[in-house]
Image (cartoon, rainbow, N blue to C red):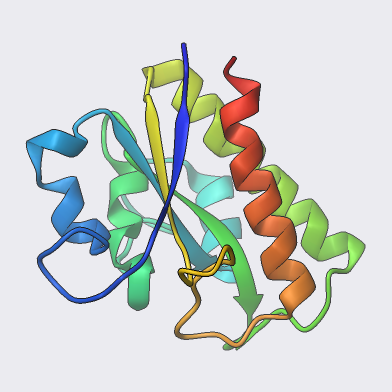
Length: 155
């Protein structure tokens, strides 16, 4: 199975780039969406992995699609970009571990459910799009590298 990774730029509501809108469109039925999550919700979901409760509530920005990670089948997954109300300030081993855990979890969901397209928020210049948190550039670059690696894992 071939998986194609698509950087997606948010330019407004109810159009491509708005993950909530895209999830409702038939043309994206085989797509999985990656959203920027906060560490607290990410860890809560990892502990829960249910269809409701911790990690299943809509957040701000593209984390508005967080409930979709609790759908059957899951159509979204979060990668933490910050904690305690602020973006990660460095790519520490702990931060890298959270990112790696998230990407492995997402890769398993993509393979398990046969998704062929993966969308993530892009800044339009090859980087990760972030709007709520200011995130260290090394963290954003690492996240994009890991997301882009999802395509090579499927071939």
